Length: 227
Image 1: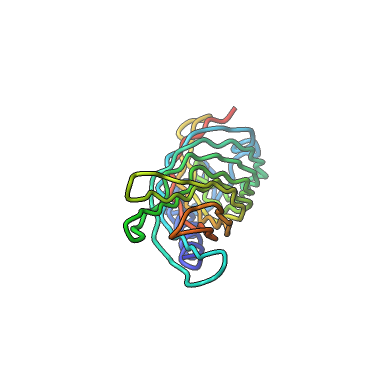
Image 2: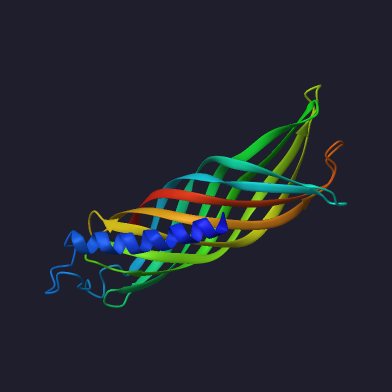
């Protein structure tokens, strides 16, 4: 999954740059392929909202040892982001932080019981680096990621026992942002998120204490307002 995500991020970056050049978004400069926007074009603070779809995998293994169980996860997420860009005449550097409510998870039958694992919310703090082609900016991004996960077991009588844990890891991705006006822009983004492994203790038999790993991809659409 990680290799696929990184390959997709690189492909998105290259495709976005090629499409921007083909469409002639060159900021009115003399070059038909590339001409930087003014230094202030993308510079400034911004904030916005987004909607996501996440898909990936979760692995769990008894803390005391034993076989590893792997399952696919998926679900929607939505949240907000804020950041700052510095436009250096066509080369844009920036930072961005986001926080997402998440429905990414899965459930499975364990005998007569049901085990569930999910990511309740997650956030990232990332650097961004892009090239502006007039009103369009493809970019790559990466940095720190963290989230809260929940694992639960519901027995045949309908009684649920759940535990939560904080995961920390990293993220890497790419995106394309396009200006609709001087202050409003839309973006499409792909992120691969690795939240690592955490222990969930206190779950009853037949699950018991579990070490759970959360890794997933996020496809995101958002809107930003530059102040």
